Image (cartoon, rainbow, N blue to C red):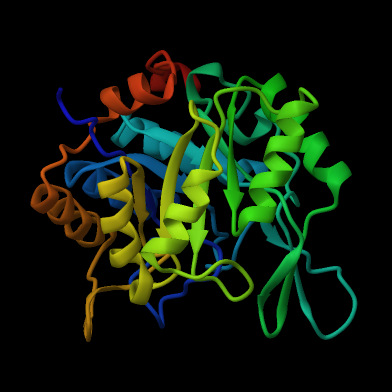
Length: 300
């Protein structure tokens, strides 16, 4: 029986990585070029945060529209996954506060143009400490409201889970009919307050996922991601990389681009003898429909 292809997601920018750490793409034009190079090297999903003209994270719908327009024009084939996560700059106190559902997803993020609509949206499910100075808040009502918006707009939610408790939250939402099958998960291992990043930790999380669900595994930082990616490939899952998640291709060697990070994991798939999914194959595996190709002349 042929082995199922591995879907590689590339998180090209993130909301925290800066140019002092890595040559992260910041403008819509840079993001589109970086996405194109990542797809050429094996990525089939592009996970998208956007930045403002000053390089800082942006929550403006028009900035998402600019970035998605550029991506679709230059590299129309991959699945686009947007994220509503961001920093709550109005939060009081000394602790930095992020909110997983700070952005209320709306069609303005793709300029109300159906042809530009992304296919997936990241969904945070829990409140937790991100590091010693940062907390992410996700009140249950915010989660439920965001899920309703995601489905009403025709997108697929992808659940971020940091430990078994997050999986239980997702299963509870499924039982109540708020989430729908099949579920899509990003298993995040090795974070500050989440599960560890060993092969046993990943096996433990996978054991509790519904049988028909789709899952991708991510080890936080270059220290963990290759180990977790290798184990995910062996277990039949999918993998993720990109400057949001890691900046090194090997010990002491910084990545020059997102494409180099993708190629690094592609080599791991080839070593283990699992094929790489094309964007079309990723759509088939995940049940994601191909959007009509935009006529950019009519969108100007």
